[in-house]
Every structure is written in C-alpha cells, then in structure tokens.
Amino acid sequence: MFFQVIGVFLLALLEIWLAIPAGLIWGLNPALVILLVCGGTLSGVGVILLLSGKIRAGSNRWLDKNRTGDAALSLSALFAQIIISLQERLRSGRLYKVWLKYGIIGLGLLSPVLTSAPIAAFLGVMLNAGRLKLFVWIAIGVAVWAAGLTLAMHFGLILLGI
Image (cartoon, rainbow, N blue to C red; front, side):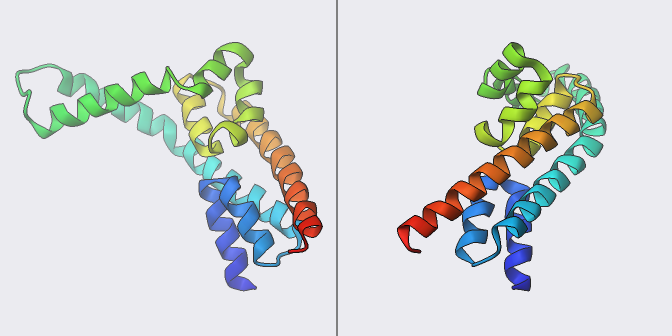
C-alpha cells in the first residue's frame, strides 16, 4: 500500500486525471485518494508559485540580454526564440481565454479540468496574479474536482463490477 500511496501522490503532481484512476484501481480508499490528489497537486502548485517569480524575472533579464546582437545561430539566441514562442503560446491557449473571461477565480476553478493545476499556477504568475489568491482558488478548484471525479469514478467502477 505504501508504494500505491506514493504513486498516487507523485502522479497528482503531474495530473489529477492520472492519479485518481490509478488510486482507485490500486484499491485505495476514495477518501485517501482525494487527500493524496489534493496534497500532491497543491504541492506542485506551491513549488511553482514559490519559484515562478524568480524564473519570470530571470527569464526576462536573460531574454533582454540575448535578443540583441547578431548571434542568430548561437545557443542563447535559440533559447531566446523558444522562450518567446512559449510566451506567445501561453497567450493563445484555453487557460488564457478563461483568464480573460473569468479572471483568477475562473482560472483556479477550471484549471484541473482544462490542464494541470501547476501549469495554471505558472500562467497566473506570468499574468501577474496574486500568488496567495491564486493558490486559494486553485486549491478550491482542485478539492472540488478531485472529490467529484474520485466519487464519480468510484461509483462507476462499482456499477461496472470492477
């Protein structure tokens, strides 16, 4: 059971859609699965929120330094282009559209369904959302979706006789 608990927690760092079915299939109690998924996901979100401000500041300084110059084939110029394209992609994705329409509350509540919560946390910080407010709304969203999906999958497995 120890390895199943660790496995669900680690899977939840990546995605709740992986962790919930794995925990239920491994025979863990649904309440334990909900706690592990919330704990794992929010641990990942916390790390992202703690580090993302430094990452954002460092990447902006690095981009400013490497955008100029005639080093079109240098490794730094290549990485600068990759970061620029990632920033453009963030602004054209589903989460950004949710951000524009519903703000920080919508981003927090819908992030577990649209993509992983750590990615939503990173996007929120890149959009200058307050870290504490972002964490609270993502935590509410993760708790609601983890409980709902775990219970739905649990009773679905019972109905299927698995």
